[in-house]
Image (cartoon, rainbow, N blue to C red; front, side, top):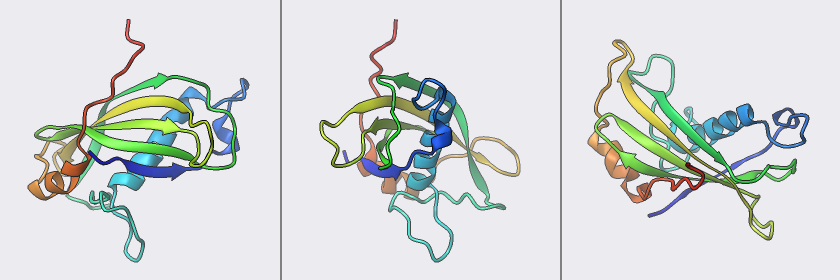
Length: 157
């Protein structure tokens, strides 16, 4: 299984009064990584080989978030270098997939720190009807090398 690496810079506004990334901003970081990893870029721009979803206005199929889970392992302090966010697919169903994430310290920073684990369930729906639609075989084939075990959350009680 191969993981997708996406570098996401932190913004000063991502931090709260406790001097670490705010829990609500964590959802934005995950969203940015997910968009880079899976949404096709605009014409004339290069994207990752996994960025195949058409997210432009007027697209026939859209992806909706059905569920998200985040496990905070350590506070993320402010740093100027971008976080290294690793993504993979924990499960591909008929119309849904689970995107898994691990957020690490920037590439080259030692020791490497794992700050957060997360998972997002996306459901593919027909834009016109809002009803689930099957994930096409060509997407399944392109994403197959990135399918691995789902996130193993450790803090469940």
